[in-house]
Length: 315
Image (tube, rainbow, N blue to C red; front, side, top):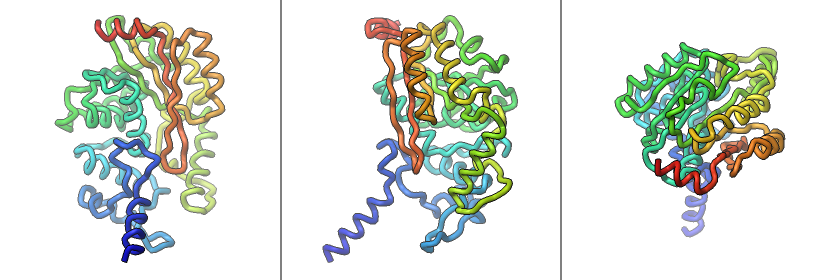
């Protein structure tokens, strides 16, 4: 009997994704029955795996989008989440990780204002930041249509309404310039930068991802999380985007307490550290995250001394 109980406990423990942040609501394996109640259309994308357990066809963009829609409805009370299929559809557990670790960086501070660089049509970071911590957001994007879709999501969900100010970045070569105003006091900026340096690289990445998910090789595939060019591609890729972000952040050192960015490629870190030292960052933190089989990290930096941070917070 004891052996059976221990076996049951081990089985239950294995269902917990221990590599996720303790406050992440997505630590447990998906409850497909509960998710189907939220989004019945998800049913056609459920099939048994090689162990006979029901799972979702993650290689199909439509399935991923419906799954995330169901998660938002079930875990975050967000009932309206609509945007074009051509736009990026993010994995909710990983995006929630970023928000929770940034909350740790801010040490539980209240009345937070967060700047989201590249909010996208899905508006996922404001959704999670508001739902989990009641943050206020300034959300920016280079795509006017994306901002319109994101704004409709906010306006259509009573729990989110009134918490986000949208600002269009009219020059795609700028990141903070023209977005941060002289009077802005921002606690933290967040960004999931375009990773690929070209459309060709983006397609290669998606092909590799689908092959890993299905075990099959395809000549042509769709991006399984979708995504328009401006969401996935930037000249010079992630390395150049974050480098530009670091350079621009110097001019807004007194407007923003912490600047942060996701970094997918660990090999880029040393260049970022060198640049941050060169441009006078007073504190640099690297926060490691693990989501599924992927390991990512957040780089955070500030130009304020401890004394300046205390004075900034008081003001």
